[in-house]
Length: 63
Image (tube, rainbow, N blue to C red):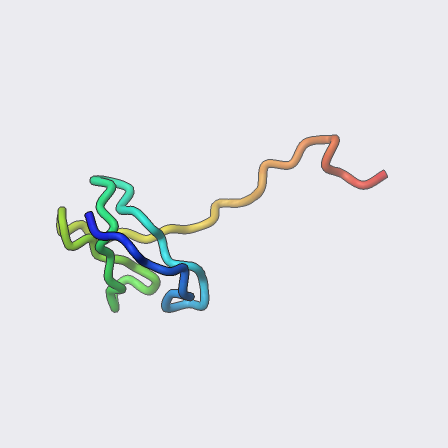
């Protein structure tokens, strides 16, 4: 694993992932396809990170 990465915006203006979700390595590079994808240099997997939504409770709602 390599260190010293900063949280610079990724291809879509979002923060980059710091670790591969499969092997935990930190050496990630942007991939052209699919849009917003990242390639792990250690395990060679290409993945995307996407927000599915918010899990709000009744306490989160405004009165």
